[in-house]
Image (cartoon, rainbow, N blue to C red):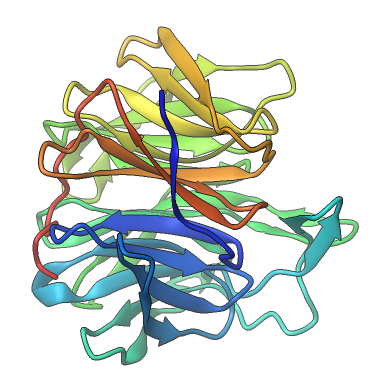
Length: 304
């Protein structure tokens, strides 16, 4: 595979959204911002956001729905940036909206029974709502466990669907919309649940189904689903993308060219959705590469 650097010198990029005009929106966690990057190298500011913008998804009418984890501390070693525990200026996790003109508004900051902790990733269901991972929060000597959650686009309802989960990170839907996947960072596992109605899961029996556990000191970050239902997940500290079939077979692993233990996310773009955009966050790069699988077209993908 031939990797090309789409953009560099980014401030811990994550949450890529490939747009129909060839540009890509990324969040910068450390930079507290969203940028729209263009193939010719220039960029536009989308918004500046307090806390730490983490995951992003396009909703109707060009509105971006943002998973803001509330803030992170940062560590630098050997020229690489990495997130640390909860900072002193933590503002609390929240789901936000960003209008096409850059206005940032809080949509949700609390569940009915407590605060939203640290939203990480988000995916639209095309039925008036979205699933998101609430990662939990890590402090110096303790941590809060997380959840898989669901919210309505109109701000009318948000709830935890499955909790507690141990560091839930990426989230995605199968092509038919009947299965939701999440990756857990620390366990190196991907889980799935059957969806019975918008924001409703089949929790009978054991509830969760294990798709794969990668083991071997493998951490997982965000993920994307392709048109065939394969799961492509950012894999740390190996620094690349692992591809897994809907049956749990590992199809392969692709490493980014410049060593980066914090490869964090992947999305698909291009006219045939066979261009993968991969965030190498520690080195501040966004790569593009021809991918062997066509990505799944996301809901509201052409709203902006």
